[in-house]
Image (cartoon, rainbow, N blue to C red; front, side, top):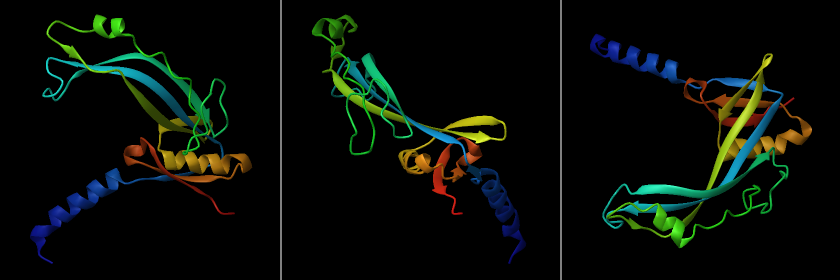
Length: 170
């Protein structure tokens, strides 16, 4: 191997080590999925050609799913992903949409937007850590939670998220 490649290899290995994922085992955990509906309207001088229209959020509703159990206030569900949903917020009226319009702008039609934010809280020593996660981790917790099966968690870059959860085999 030629010596001129050595600095590149050392730099690459250092970067890989600094950004690699770590794992931890959790016996206490809770997964949440915040499901929400929001009405939004896009505003722009020309909605067809303006790449970044201004977006106004009108009414929204949300409900917090915990470990797959039916949350209070949930009225819609379980959906095809095992999530409960809140009631629909009231659709903005024509008057409300027009009140948010600036001079020279046109308003789009109200759009109902569905959103889900997943988080996992788990015990670390005597404290708890809450990190963003994804649907797959949420579903793994939903399956493991009733039997309190320990989970091996794979954390993301700089331990800022939970990327994977797998049951620990006993």
